[in-house]
Length: 341
Ligand SMILES: Cc1cc2nc3c(=O)[nH]c(=O)nc-3n(C[C@H](O)[C@H](O)[C@H](O)COP(=O)(O)OP(=O)(O)OC[C@H]3O[C@@H](n4cnc5c(N)ncnc54)[C@H](O)[C@@H]3O)c2cc1C
Image (cartoon, rainbow, N blue to C red; front, side):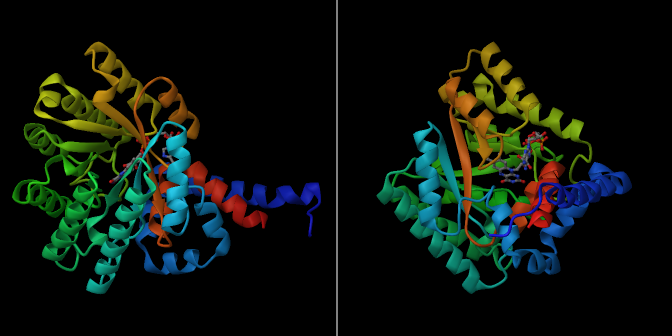
């Protein structure tokens, strides 16, 4: 086995650090984030990075594995630590009907396997993986079939929220399934606090007594659609969280997933819950697999419900690069690992 001398081992680390520092110096964190979000959708970058075996090894920090078995194993481990799970078969922006059907079939199988294995997990899906960009009716029909299968097992399907150009279509499909097909709380939706429209959407969802996940939002959005400033996104997050945890909302049937790793958002939620005397079983915290594991366990130990979003599959590139964009230190970790080999 080839071993590096202790001194030379640090060279790649220092090169990585210099590279990231240079990017920061030149562009600032906001621009670095924008660059990464651009790279998350660029086909050339996906082709380049996805082929690097080392990239997969680093991405593995955020992804449970390549197949259902790996995802179930992770779910079992998390369940053993007192955490619930939502599973995500990675993939998005599918461009062929065949691809959309393949994703649907995989998720149907996932629902079967969750049921057979007895793990405590529901599933999260992306409509662009199920054909939304090809034909809205195709995506609607695919999710409907997932919901029919989930219902057989008393399980649930949550529709993730993607870029703002599909927000309206996503909400329409969610409403159609909930109302026309009577799936009620078996189908859930996600609200992103960075979007200006979210307050109005939340008002409607509160009226409907919906099953909602609240997150900040992970995509590159124009200033016409979303707050460019983190401070305003955070303020919006707290406001929306309070709207959906308020007694009136809970009486209507709202069940909220507070999805964040941000200490400030978590503390604001804990304070609101304590002030309003809200039962810890009346909502849940949600976090992504591999991010702030210490905090995930602390919340469980404090008696809160915690659900972990567990992605699996081979189409990990866009998901992984969005995680890099959320925290530049992850990019540093990624580059230093690549250079170290
Ligand atoms: C369960 C779940 C489901 C989600 N579903 C969606 C969805 O459907 N649509 C959507 O647009 N977005 C989704 N997101 C992503 C979300 O919108 C944010 O991009 C992401 O959660 C980062 O925001 P934050 O609230 O953690 O706060 P931030 O302000 O981004 O981060 C606060 C702190 O959390 C830690 N942290 C945050 N991100 C990372 C990371 N990647 N690696 C390491 N540490 C990190 C850091 O300590 C950071 O300082 C989801 C997030 C979660 C937790």
